[in-house]
Length: 276
Image 1 (cartoon, rainbow, N blue to C red):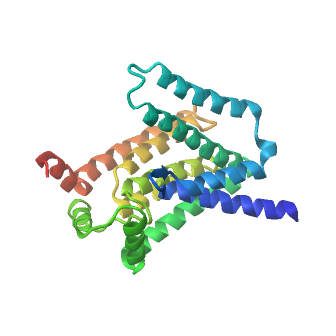
Image 2: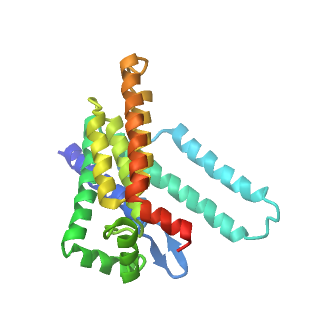
């Protein structure tokens, strides 16, 4: 019974921690900015609940990386300049390492099938939420949330999205569409790597769906990473058939890239070229 409760708590902490990393919600304590406090707390609890999975050599790597960042401060020219800011940056680096390691420890408690389901669930949750933000009053909630906790969403932002992308691009509790896009690409790649069947067409479809909704060029990079992963992480990567499929997929990607640049991102490219 205790193991079942522990596994449920692990799932809740992982979901909250990963979603917190997605939203990148910071907390202001006086003059001090605490980045991603929810994710940090989830990571601490995951390490505490699964301390038997913590390895000394992994902790030593974290300490070594942190010491290297401190050495960078010591051997920086004009060490007295911005000393406090550099020290805070090193502490934030350690903070981020702990966040990442906590997520890693939590993920180690599950098999590949469960991990695939977890990251696909995150993809579905975010994508469906973004669609609801576009077509329902959820946009009012997201706007109110952004105005209080992130950056205010102004009418000028909406007009800019419509001018560059054709319609309002959902933020879904983040400050930037790029944050959503990068998170979804990572979730898709992790789900693909933990999929025993590794259906390239299915995960390509996920990227295309997300690209249609969010209109971000990051998904073009995600498409290329997916095709590269298909070849290099496949057990039969030396097979001529696999190679031909990969090359064909890459050709489709290039074709899709050209079409996207000329149609989807034409307004954005023009805006950049004109300096507007």
